[in-house]
Image (tube, rainbow, N blue to C red; front, side, top):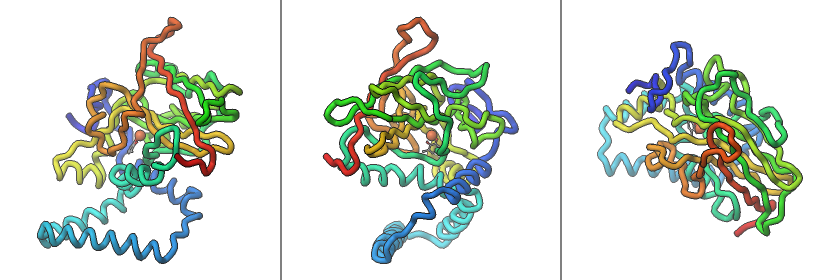
Length: 298
Ligand code: MBD
Ligand code: FE
């Protein structure tokens, strides 16, 4: 298999469908331009503690594993390439974000969190339920009706809830990170009704291989790993006065549910799709959301 195919062989990447450097640079640009950077203010004590611990950890590895000069220079060259390819967001979101999520969500009741990943784009078109995400007229894949309900931790329906959803197409590509896809393909902000119900018509995404032609791909092949994430749907759920939850949802039976390169699969995030009961094509799946009030802990 090459990096130009999905694992199922269902689709082949076209010549012009972009490179790791393009996707990486876009993710880097977007992060740099986002509000996240403007707000950063980490106190000196924490910088000293965390940077000191990280430096110590890597020095300990060098001692324990007797790192050679050749390995040290390979590391230096690789780190330079990560930056040149714009792949710091990808690297961090694949190999570190899952731990940051767990550390920061363990006290929150309700919906379970997972990583945001590098391909979120804020400001997707707002659609009322029942919604259909933007797709092409000949969109390949299995139609998926994703529906559910928002409640608080007491079971009361939530007003003003919304689902931000983004996912790859049936070839494993994300709009705005691969050329020639419609800008908001498979991206939307869906508002639930006054009883907290939402319905979203979309297509089942394909398993996803992180870009293999950049620094992260170079590491993966040099180490003999694989680059796959299981098929997943990215979600941000929120309601006024409630804590925002970023998560992902997965499909049973995916060959990479057990060895996700980004370590972001959890049993609570597994969907249970069934054939549609209303005679429509494809599958439907129900997934309900319990949100915690601002400041509410377990
Ligand atoms: C993705 O789609 C993703 O979800 C992660 C975590 C990393 C790379 C691409
Ligand atoms: Fe993703």
